[in-house]
Image 1 (cartoon, rainbow, N blue to C red):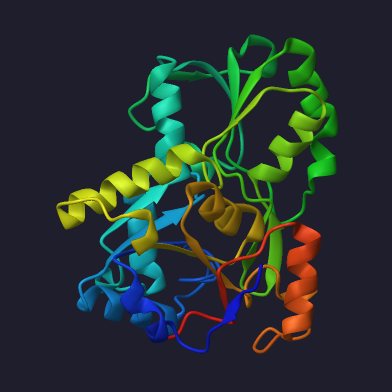
Image 2 (image 1 turned 180 degrees about the horizontal axis):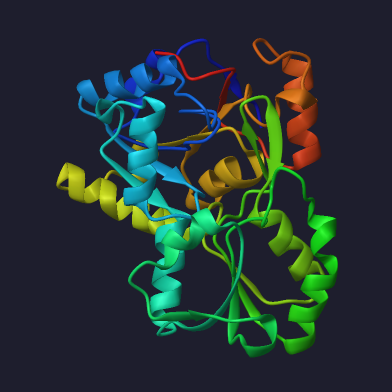
Amino acid sequence: MPFACLDRFSTVAPRYDVVLCDVWGVVHNGLAAHGEACEALARFRAGGGTVILITNAPRPSAWVMRQLDRLGVPGAAYDGVMTSGDVTRDVVAGRNGGAVFHIGPERDVTIFDGLNVRFTPVEQAEYAVCSGLFDDTAETPEDYRDLMARLRGRGLFMVCANPDLVVERGAARVYCAGAIADLYAGMGGEVLYAGKPHRPIYDAALAKAAAARGAAAPPGRTLAIGDSLRTDITGARALGIDGLFVSGGIHAEQLDSRDSPSTAALAGMFATAGITPHAVTSRLVW
């Protein structure tokens, strides 16, 4: 399937009423906002569009909005936020909390605020919630193989609060909960992935967009923007909407150039991944 290469978002923006935009890698890099991307989203909204930031952050949306403020992402760039942390909270609430073995850093425990959970060792847990690595600055998924074997030995169900495999934090790449969950699933463990590319987070984001607009936008007037083929573009395809791939994000190392990758390099990467976006841009610019 052919794909379009875009220099500017403004050339296609009038085709859409709703944008579901990835956060990390598009709107910011974990350390600072991408000013041009924020401006592009703000100008889309100024023209009557609705923007829902949709992220695999393993935290409640209110927490993410405070982080966006700290990183310099203006409120004018979006109408609402939907996180995989929000979906995870719904899953945990649906299980009435219970005894949880939490895999992830201490900073992620906000995902459980107000929920009736008890944190326990593996041996007493009813299920596990993975929000990330305990120390993503030093560990890799292989460091968790023995732990996953212990979970598998007990037949524990796992909720993956962030299906991303890696993200860029500034110039560094760090592993995410999805890499741990995939390891566990590969060992035969049962995993529910709370975020992209799976349907629940999109349904929730579209409901938020419809509430903001006063009516739902048709699929043909909805666009997903993101820098991950595995999550953002696969999710768009499953939802039946167009996907705009930002090539200067986590896949940049696979291409000739972060700023201007060749069409041949892009086509080769899409063929290897088995999925092609509707359009490509190196970075989100109005």
